Length: 467
Image (cartoon, rainbow, N blue to C red; front, side, top):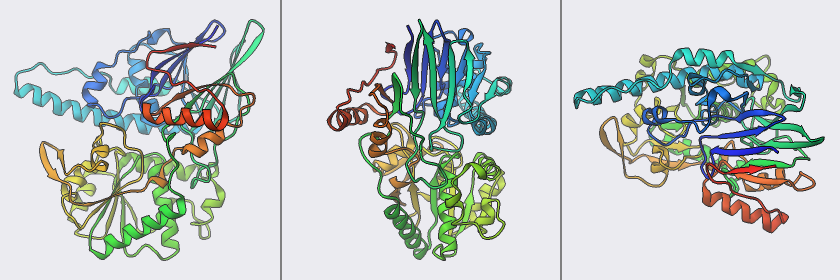
């Protein structure tokens, strides 16, 4: 008998974490991500895993985003020493992701301890450190797509392309118990069909149990053609009123997709005279990895921006500037108009985008473009929901900039794509809907029952199922 325990991203969008256990397999973890939206310092300090990390046999990681991978160094700090299975591209990106996350965490911790010192409170101790990141990276055991790996005499692991970001995987785990083979599939984060640079999510046909994400299970995204037209219009209108554009973007996937679309616009002569700044050390490092892995991307998409021999995004987009250090980032503040600033974090929970908001979000000539999901409780969600004031660095700042939400840029499958993907499994598997807000998953569940006569289940945090 095998069990799945739903530890994180159960009726929530972030914090992906599921434990799979059986006599044939041992104890495995699918993902170990941070919960985004809470106070990072307190969230990291208070993490208490509902299992013994030193008793885990392995972790299987779907992709590098922090809401799927960010707690793995913390897991190592508490004793995990097993292999970390992931794709090769994911393994290359984890160093960048984890080192950047640690740097932000340490800065937040330093600030929090200064506040505590001022009121006579004891300082907080770091939940993890650079040594834990190094130890976690050494555990990486990369596996190529379709290179099925035998975990033991009774279990096999295979990764399939999920089309979400570079290296993102659908996890297929096969177990043999009592002479019977069982298949568990975890979708990870599924990308959209025909998404720029990414291949379509691969279609699997057989499973006993499927853990399927439902981030956008209640709706479809706006068609890409309409989204790109709106993107062009918003940029041009902001250019005409001599403003600047701020784009909060995730360092992996979204930043590269935005740069790709800007390159297409540049080639078509539709980009006005914008200066473009990728103001994210992590985003720059990840973009360089994308440049090194062009062979893994959709070649038809690349042909739209390549002219002759061109092997980097800066070659595709000559007005792009990488701002690696803090001084270069601060220098952007001197630009009065004509700057497109792409910076993390994607949900505005930290990073340089908050500094750019401080300098520009109060000015009605400027524009903020949201191009990704904003989880409940995040500053980005407050702004999207119409907040007139936001608190930044201890001050209340008016939100007077134009706020544009371009949902078509999402790297997640919309409702129709999710229905299409799960519909290829025959016979129908048991479906567990995860990685979505409760009301969104309820809509998806009802749609599955109406359209496919499939009775899906929405597990709650801590729930255990057997299969």
